[in-house]
Image (tube, rainbow, N blue to C red; front, side, top):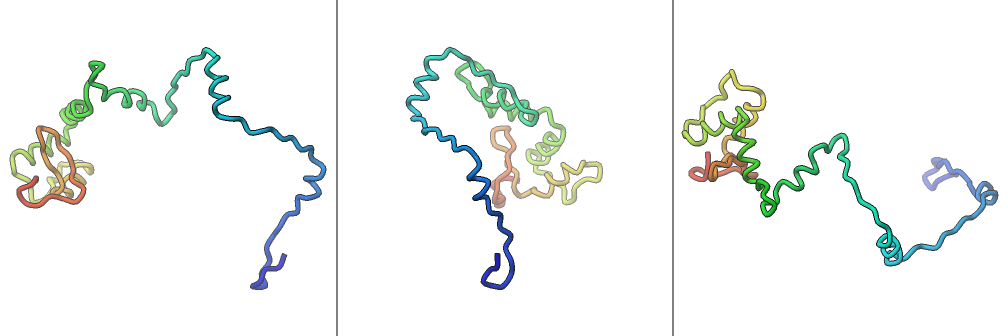
Length: 140
Protein backbone atom coordinates (compact mmCIF):
# COMPACT_ATOMS: atom_id res chain seq x y z
CA UNK A 1 0.00 0.00 0.00
CA UNK A 2 1.41 3.40 -0.96
CA UNK A 3 1.63 6.12 1.72
CA UNK A 4 1.34 9.89 1.20
CA UNK A 5 5.12 10.32 1.27
CA UNK A 6 5.38 7.79 -1.62
CA UNK A 7 6.87 5.05 0.57
CA UNK A 8 5.19 1.68 0.91
CA UNK A 9 3.48 0.13 3.91
CA UNK A 10 3.21 -3.65 4.20
CA UNK A 11 -0.37 -4.71 4.94
CA UNK A 12 -1.91 -8.14 5.38
CA UNK A 13 -5.55 -8.69 4.47
CA UNK A 14 -7.12 -11.21 6.85
CA UNK A 15 -10.73 -10.79 5.63
CA UNK A 16 -10.75 -14.00 3.63
CA UNK A 17 -9.21 -15.98 6.53
CA UNK A 18 -11.68 -14.44 8.99
CA UNK A 19 -14.61 -15.47 6.77
CA UNK A 20 -13.50 -19.12 7.08
CA UNK A 21 -13.17 -19.17 10.88
CA UNK A 22 -16.07 -19.94 13.19
CA UNK A 23 -17.19 -17.09 15.41
CA UNK A 24 -17.40 -18.04 19.09
CA UNK A 25 -18.77 -15.34 21.35
CA UNK A 26 -19.02 -15.44 25.12
CA UNK A 27 -20.91 -12.89 27.19
CA UNK A 28 -18.83 -10.88 29.63
CA UNK A 29 -19.26 -12.08 33.19
CA UNK A 30 -20.32 -9.83 36.03
CA UNK A 31 -17.60 -9.64 38.66
CA UNK A 32 -20.14 -10.03 41.46
CA UNK A 33 -21.43 -13.30 40.03
CA UNK A 34 -17.88 -14.58 39.60
CA UNK A 35 -16.97 -13.73 43.20
CA UNK A 36 -20.16 -15.40 44.46
CA UNK A 37 -19.28 -18.56 42.53
CA UNK A 38 -15.76 -18.52 43.99
CA UNK A 39 -17.13 -18.00 47.50
CA UNK A 40 -18.98 -21.31 47.27
CA UNK A 41 -15.74 -23.20 46.65
CA UNK A 42 -13.42 -24.29 49.43
CA UNK A 43 -9.83 -23.80 48.36
CA UNK A 44 -6.54 -22.52 49.70
CA UNK A 45 -4.08 -20.30 47.85
CA UNK A 46 -0.51 -21.49 48.30
CA UNK A 47 2.26 -18.97 47.77
CA UNK A 48 5.28 -20.27 45.93
CA UNK A 49 8.06 -17.76 45.48
CA UNK A 50 9.43 -17.30 41.99
CA UNK A 51 13.05 -17.75 41.06
CA UNK A 52 13.87 -14.05 41.50
CA UNK A 53 11.64 -13.45 44.52
CA UNK A 54 12.70 -16.17 46.91
CA UNK A 55 12.54 -13.95 49.98
CA UNK A 56 9.52 -11.81 49.06
CA UNK A 57 7.14 -13.63 51.38
CA UNK A 58 9.46 -13.39 54.38
CA UNK A 59 10.07 -9.68 53.80
CA UNK A 60 6.37 -8.90 53.45
CA UNK A 61 5.61 -10.43 56.85
CA UNK A 62 8.74 -9.38 58.70
CA UNK A 63 7.63 -5.85 59.60
CA UNK A 64 4.63 -6.99 61.66
CA UNK A 65 5.56 -6.24 65.26
CA UNK A 66 2.13 -7.22 66.57
CA UNK A 67 2.91 -10.86 65.78
CA UNK A 68 6.15 -10.71 67.76
CA UNK A 69 8.33 -10.32 64.68
CA UNK A 70 11.11 -7.79 64.26
CA UNK A 71 10.36 -4.38 62.81
CA UNK A 72 12.00 -3.16 59.61
CA UNK A 73 14.24 -0.85 61.65
CA UNK A 74 15.48 -3.76 63.77
CA UNK A 75 16.08 -5.85 60.65
CA UNK A 76 18.09 -3.03 59.06
CA UNK A 77 20.14 -2.56 62.23
CA UNK A 78 20.89 -6.29 62.36
CA UNK A 79 21.91 -6.31 58.68
CA UNK A 80 24.14 -3.27 59.15
CA UNK A 81 25.88 -4.83 62.15
CA UNK A 82 26.79 -7.91 60.09
CA UNK A 83 28.15 -6.06 57.04
CA UNK A 84 31.84 -5.18 57.42
CA UNK A 85 31.69 -2.31 54.91
CA UNK A 86 28.84 -0.70 56.85
CA UNK A 87 30.81 -1.08 60.08
CA UNK A 88 33.75 0.68 58.43
CA UNK A 89 31.38 3.45 57.29
CA UNK A 90 29.96 3.69 60.83
CA UNK A 91 33.50 4.23 62.22
CA UNK A 92 34.02 7.08 59.76
CA UNK A 93 30.67 8.67 60.62
CA UNK A 94 30.66 8.31 64.40
CA UNK A 95 34.35 9.05 64.84
CA UNK A 96 34.10 12.13 62.57
CA UNK A 97 37.33 11.08 60.87
CA UNK A 98 36.21 10.74 57.27
CA UNK A 99 39.36 10.12 55.17
CA UNK A 100 40.25 12.57 52.41
CA UNK A 101 40.78 9.63 50.05
CA UNK A 102 39.27 6.18 50.10
CA UNK A 103 41.84 3.76 51.57
CA UNK A 104 43.34 1.48 48.89
CA UNK A 105 42.47 -1.70 50.81
CA UNK A 106 38.73 -0.91 50.52
CA UNK A 107 36.46 -2.80 48.17
CA UNK A 108 34.73 -1.29 45.14
CA UNK A 109 31.50 -1.12 47.16
CA UNK A 110 33.29 0.81 49.89
CA UNK A 111 34.66 3.22 47.28
CA UNK A 112 31.09 3.92 46.14
CA UNK A 113 30.03 4.51 49.76
CA UNK A 114 33.01 6.83 50.29
CA UNK A 115 32.10 8.86 47.18
CA UNK A 116 28.70 9.67 48.71
CA UNK A 117 30.31 11.00 51.90
CA UNK A 118 28.09 14.11 52.03
CA UNK A 119 24.92 12.01 51.96
CA UNK A 120 25.39 9.65 54.92
CA UNK A 121 23.76 10.16 58.30
CA UNK A 122 23.78 8.15 61.53
CA UNK A 123 20.44 8.39 63.31
CA UNK A 124 19.96 6.32 66.48
CA UNK A 125 22.52 3.79 65.28
CA UNK A 126 20.89 3.37 61.85
CA UNK A 127 22.94 4.57 58.88
CA UNK A 128 20.97 5.98 55.98
CA UNK A 129 21.72 7.90 52.79
CA UNK A 130 20.01 11.24 52.23
CA UNK A 131 18.97 11.65 48.58
CA UNK A 132 20.00 15.31 48.17
CA UNK A 133 23.08 15.25 50.36
CA UNK A 134 23.53 16.89 53.73
CA UNK A 135 24.90 20.27 54.71
CA UNK A 136 27.69 20.67 57.24
CA UNK A 137 26.49 19.75 60.72
CA UNK A 138 23.58 17.62 59.52
CA UNK A 139 25.50 14.40 58.94
CA UNK A 140 28.89 13.34 57.66
